[in-house]
Amino acid sequence: MEATELRALMGVARKSWKVFLSYKVWFVSDIAMGLFFVANALLIGLGLTGKRTSEALAKLTGYSDYLTFAVLGFMVLAFGLTFMSGFVWSIVDELYAGTLEYSFAAPMGRITFFLGNVLVRLALNFLYLAIYVPLFYFIFDLTLSFSGLLKGLLVLLLGSIGMIGLGMAVAGIVLYLKDPGPFINVMEMLVFALSGAMYPVEILPDPLRLLALVLPYAPTTEAVRSVVAHGLAESLDKIAYLIVISLAYVILGYLGYKWSEKRAREVGLKSY
Image: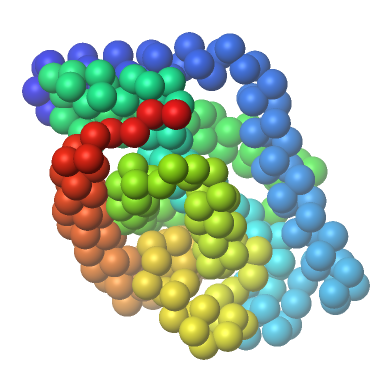
């Protein structure tokens, strides 16, 4: 990355950081969300089976401990929502403020603009993981190994490439919408429902399962869980599929967004 692009990236990130600091309750709510998610997973497991382990889950996924299964799923879900919400709301916030044309006229690449807006969220995600993991070990007695968790994080970063591509594609769609709020809510619900975070995608109806497998979230979730449970050698097929999906979304997302922005400029970038 050129020095000018790097300075632009850090400038956008500083702006996002100042916005985050102006809403200090966000930090508390973000930490609470992870704890509530994992606690809900534990309660669901106990309610369905009377214990936190499940033989049926083990047959489908290789995980008998539902809580460990859900913790790994939450890691992927948090990153997925970061890119989806971060890219989209970076457009929406500028549209509402009426400053999108000024931001796009700035001498920086579009990916710099988007990554600058999510850089703070990514750093916070890693901070949250540093808080969550000890808490989960202490409160819920997880059985994850540190080496397995580290391998899972590396696979998660690989899957994040595809999430970035999809985030750019969705951000392009938002440029056309007069009121993007409902669309964003639907997309975030789809991410949650089709990520495989709370349950294995194998239990979904065939059309939804197919949709889940062609989006970058569920393949990332399955690859992360497979690597943590079985190691890299046993997970090469899932990692290879994830690489293909990620590369496809990077290309399609970038081209789709560029086309959307070009069409939006022809009619004028909207502000609200």
